[in-house]
Each structure stands twice: as structure tokens, then as C-alpha cells.
Length: 361
Image (tube, rainbow, N blue to C red; front, side, top):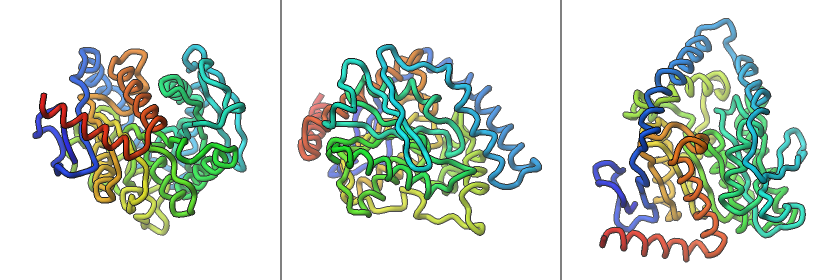
């Protein structure tokens, strides 16, 4: 991996000939410095308590996740950014919705480009409503319509079925005439990992490859061993590793075992399109982001790993308050436009020129 914009000691060890670049795009803003400890004292503490209750409460199987499924309903109060348009899409067993900005054409009238988006929520929570503002910002920043997918989750579906829903949504776009190379697969947290899993499954099924992958704080390794050992296990202001472990043990284990194939970090990334990963410097999921970047490196897949200083999990959700959130959407939008306007080879050439220039500066 090639690195820039930060002292080498702050970045993963990289090689000069890698297809991966690592960046630290910011210094934490005053509001980010304020929010970080507040989140630790509130959200992290609450999730630790919920995890404790889940581990020792009366419900000892995946039925416990039926409660968290209800989170999406009250999120109806979360509104999309001004100028957003929406239309529902029904699939067999799940649903989604088109989201686009009024400045772009109706996706029913265009097939030139689209983003396929998978929301986060740990495979147990959230949905179209909770992520409508994020997705509407993404649509506006990218100048593209977004198909936001409410894939099946625990306790009603295993991760293999979530991946199958993602592939079905990708096939839907292809069947509507969207060229694979003009589709960008994206997601945050669990949805970020799903973006990789769906792309890998599409590749293995012989489908056309999408034009790119964008993942914000991707949960891409269901095995929590590496995260437990990561320095951020104690620093993350939102996610306790024990919470992730609870979801995996109660929800995904089959006969007490976890199949490595369910985690995209355990796959060969050969043939995948260019990748952009954004993650906070204190997130425990930095461990997963680093593994994904390593897989890209091994397969010579063009990848940018952006490590944002002291940003909490899926910090882009706070773009109304955080300048880093707004800056991140600008980065994502620029990445998407670059993919649409040039080939992967041209994009790699741009990165090499950019970082040669940074080094010279």
C-alpha cells in the first residue's frame, strides 16, 4: 500500500508497489473532539448494557433480535435532504426504494448509472427509514439514483440469505438495463461488508462486475478474534466487541460453528472493481477495513483506505453537525464520478500521479 497525508507511524505498514493507498484526510474538528467522549459515555455504555442483558437474559437464541428489528419504524421522522424523490421497489421476500435528487433524472427514465446501497445495523436493526437521510445525501453528492435495499435480517434470515437478497437486487438493476460497470455497490457497517459479499457472489455467479465498491466502516469479518486484539477494542466510542460477538453467536453460528466463507475478508478479491473504504481512526472496525485493504493488495485491486481522525462509527450519518461528515460525502461523490468518467486503469493512474505529487510536496 502507498501512504500519504499522515506520519508513517500512524498508518498500516505498506509497500511502495501496492494497489492500495492509505490516507488520513482530516484532523478531528472541535465538535468531533467533543462528541467522541460523549458517545463513549452514552451510546457505548448503553450498548454494553444491552449486550450484557442479551448474554444473560432469558432469551438465549436468535429470537432476541426480534426486538431490535423495530428500530426502523420510529425512524420515519428522519427526513431526506431537500429535493429528494423516492419510489418503492418490491422484490420476492424483501423490498427497497429508489432515492434520487430532483437535479438528476428519474431512475425509471434512465439506465446510465446507479448506486446499489445496503444499510447498516448489525444485521439485526435499521432499514430504509433510518438510512434515508444518508442515502439521500449520497444520491445528491454522487449525482446518481440510489437503490436502497431492505434485505432480510436476523432473526428471520441468515447472512447467506441477506447476501442472496443483495445479489437479487443487483440482478434487478442489470435486468433493467443498467450496465454493470455503471453500478456502484455501497453500504455502511454490516451493509459495507455486504457490499463486498454481494460483489464476490456476483463475480462467482458470472455476472458483470460493478464499477466500484464504497464502504463506510464495513463489518467484514464475523470472527471477532482479531477485533478483540485490536487496540481500538477499548477506544471505540460506539461498538463493544462483545455486542458483535453476541450477534454472531446467537444469530449466525450453525451447530456452534462459523463458516469463514460468510466473511468477505476470507475470500480472494481477484477481479473486483476499485474500492473506497472510509473508517474512523478509533473504530474497532478499523481491523476489518485493514483486512479488506490487504485483500485488495493481494489481488491487485485498486483501493483507497481513508482513516478519519477520531470519527465515530458511520460518522457520515452526522453530516448535519460534523464537517467531516460533509467532507466525506464530497470524497465519496468525487470517487463515484471518477469511476463513471474513466476506467479503473485511468483511476489507478490518477492515484499514482496524486500521491507522487503529495510525496514531492
